[in-house]
Length: 340
Image 1 (spheres, rainbow, N blue to C red):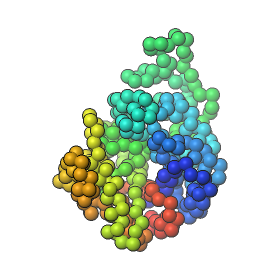
Image 2 (image 1 turned 180 degrees about the vertical axis):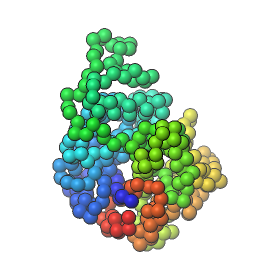
Image 3 (image 1 turned 90 degrees about the vertical axis):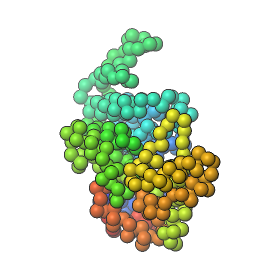
Image 4 (image 1 turned 30 degrees about the horizontal axis):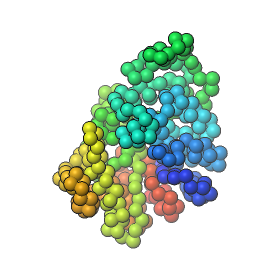
């Protein structure tokens, strides 16, 4: 099993971050991942890291699909791959409706279709085999619709890629998205995973794999784990309980809470119902209290480092390819590297 580091970069000076990345690379951490919401972008920091690292793989977790055209994403991926000498991994995701509509000013619509077409165009552009023609339901290249000049022509990138196929990872949650990941992606970036429940969690992914005639090894499973350092597991649980109450309980009109759906898949239907009801009633304290201890221990790393490494031994026996820790503690990275 491989080990990854999610930076959680928030725009702080790189002198505060770089020593962690350098140490991670020196002890054999396999990959480092940048994040993107509505602050720092996921790309710039990896361009910097490409110049100051030698071995560690560089991934986006994630670049937001609505923030860029497919062609812009392909250009960025090819550039980062060259700058890193073939170490780039392209993590993509749709983000969430309130960011897509509130920050990017675009409708959050037809997510499955958009992801499928987007990935197809990105792959064609990176493959560099021919000019990119695409006739989709949402994307058309060249564009000939309303407002077009009528003078568009298909284009092939003037940049020859270092690799004609760059690995694409999808951040997907919900059965439809996960099945699509099984069909078209090289990897899955998961935000809610537990080895004890992976048969249920991975059922949609396996359906997608079967539909596309692919094998389980064709999609690398890469959960991103929240970490809570504490003197005891109990104190670690209390640190993360509010976060998971929000993930499971939050709701928006017309938007399904797929985190709650995953928790139900894992066998926590009663607690999920209680958490959501408390959130709807405005009782956040009761929602936090309703998050099960066992759930927190299954999906996150909690407590002292010794307890975390014991837990990682369970992860090592699962189908997971890479455990990505959302933490910058180099002592934990060293201990995790030794276990995995």
